[in-house]
Length: 437
Image (tube, rainbow, N blue to C red; front, top):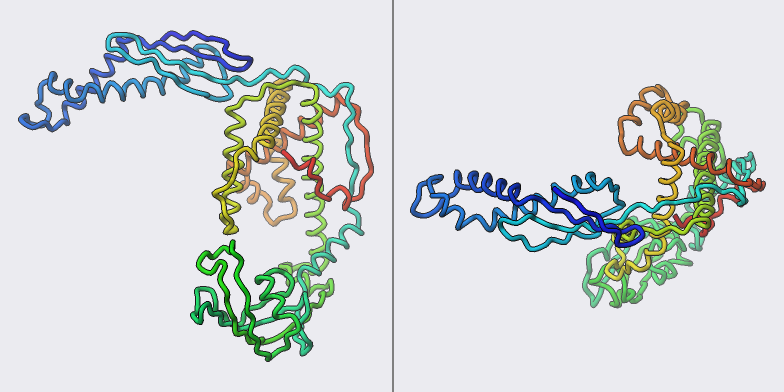
């Protein structure tokens, strides 16, 4: 096999590959022999048809199969021979094959770009200094209490925020419809459990009251058979319950799933979750700031094939999310994902360059130590670590995190770091510009 390389762009290469005709011919002959052993041709016993008959009937098909398989199998060999590690394949163009002549095809690939300046020298990187205080923990616990209220039955009229339990029987054109009936159905008013018109029709109701609520379903309602249609519901209010915020005590801890340790255990677990969330966001923020600093110092030719792949992944995730929520997904525009995909790919290219330059690795000892730290508070942590390490996906995520931590540390050594004291609440507030990648 002969391979010639043409530089067709800064990061684009065309590889012209030539495979000797005798290699093609030999493979065609071998496959025709195999076909002959099994072929059933009228006028001949199975496997006894003459070669000339076999060739006349099967040679074009077999030759095409050999050509396709040869191109596929020669792809990596051609890259190895040319000493090229591509970022991705753009196209394979074949030259019309003529029997007795060498097979020729052209591979067009994109390379990983060279990134020259892998240093933040002369740049200032702001590094937040944040801790989880007792006040932060109490604020978090207070929010959890409010999101997990107790409901106490009342004879008062229902208000926004109350829970109302109802029976309902709906009709469209005096006929019932799928999903239009229900019994002992709990609704928290104002939380959009029901359509707004239905929800508002329950405000002011009292236990035992019977009501008629009529409205028109929105034209874009998820259930197409009722979209845009007028409906009338007979509603019986079974009970009205007022919201009460529970006390922070052992009973509340038990409701949260902590049978042992009570409120003390709950505080410990919630505090650990907050610290982990802080650590995760700090890692992400610093990683993005370092990447942005390096991107500002380098003009990177981003491989289009990698951008296209990232766009496809992002679109797939977005469409799946829409479908899970029963929302229309047929008008998704791939152009809406291009800019984010380019930045994601650019960040990956920068990371790859740093890892290669500084030979950063996540050795097994470091990974196991981190896994052990994750499960230090569990019963039989060794068992948990073995389970964690046996899952390739989980292990890969941990390895990636460890590598990124080393990247951050290495790059901060080259920058001027400016520390900024911040509260937990201020730092954890979502910032769009830091959540792009």
